[in-house]
Image (cartoon, rainbow, N blue to C red; front, side, top):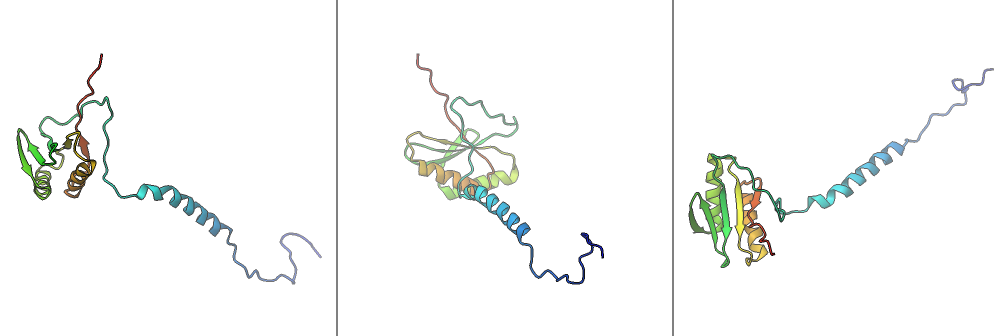
Length: 147
C-alpha cells in the first residue's frame, strides 16, 4: 500500500467548512480604506486658498474674470468688466449661470472686505458653487512691506 500526498485512502471525509480567511482579508482592507476616506467626505465649499505671497493667476486674455465682492456693510456686488451693481444672492446666482452658459471657462473670483464676517463669504462661495462654478479664486492684496 502506498502512502503519499495523493493517496489518502478510503477513509477520506468531505470537508464541510468554508475557508473564511480570504473573506476576512478583504474585509480588513475595506475597513482600512473606509477609515482613510471617511474624513475626506465632509461637506464644504471647495476652495483653493491663496498663499500670503501668491503669484497672479494666469487667465486667457479674451476671458474677463467675473468678480463677486462683499463690501464692509455686507452688500453683494457682481462686476462684469468695469460696472459694479449691488445684487442679492439669487440675482448673483442667475447672472453667473447666464455668463457660464455663454462662456464656461470664465474664471470667477471672490473679493471680500477684511471686516466682513466669514459666514457671509462662505455663503457667497456656496451660492457660486451651486450656480455651477467649479473653482472659486480669492482676491487678496499683497502684504505691505514694513521697513
